Length: 398
Image 1 (cartoon, rainbow, N blue to C red):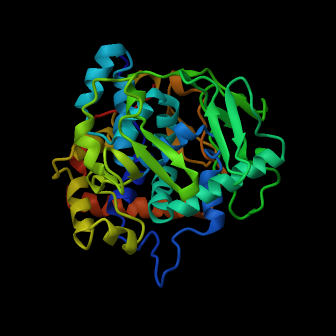
Image 2: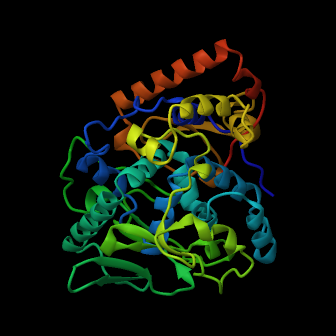
């Protein structure tokens, strides 16, 4: 079993922002205005728009539960030896949302979402507040890539264009294997049309800069975790659909009855995806209208602060320990490195090839987030609440 190496203080800053930022401070939707402008949606969605539909839908749903994504990423690394029935039994004991469990099949995707928690948080907020806009933007990006000749059927994937609607569907060539593409958003869609909003860009471990513009890594065989992947893109309605009885042939040991009432519109475990605030675990919503929609009113900020201080029973103490401990940053030869956005992160042998979403996080926003993080941490230290979690936990990565 490979125990994770310590996390850097950057994670603490990101987590503090997620949990402590008051509603409306990050952004506030007033007078019916949309929380995200079109250029922001393009920026957020560019790195995943060309993923196969089945995986894409899981990422969209899971992004609304950023704390559980972090927990799953840590769990995967600590339990990488689990296979078959052992993995099935262990996953069923976890309380995460099914979309998060499904990503256990894709450690690289979990790593991306965990390392770039700010992006994951914003992606989830966009999907919650503007689901149809998100789905429409994904289609627009796919059409741009196809018009540039950069989205075609290959041995790894099928690209299907529906005649009547011109909707572009991306499927795996084999139902037993999913291939995750790696591509440069600045190039694959043609010249980027919003210079002030450069797209996020993630280099997975092992990626060679200057390599193919659009490439596939090793295929991921569908294992027990994929039994929880029962969401799919419903492009015609601009939403994600759920069929809880999907993938029963992959994992028949899931207690699907406990999820049946988490679906809206239709009966029998089928219908539109419905966000479950219980899995949000204290993370503030971006705007008041979204918070009110999920019955998270004025008490949200107070509950978030209590949770982050380790007084909540949802397991926040564990996350605080994993992020705040700086005493062992040098353990095991771990060295600080900076990603393309200028953020320091912990490097390890298994992460030696990792980079980050670069352009968006440079400049003034980096200073802004750092300043806000220092302010939050300083305030918390003065109350003696965070100091307890800074003695010696850890962070690492598969």
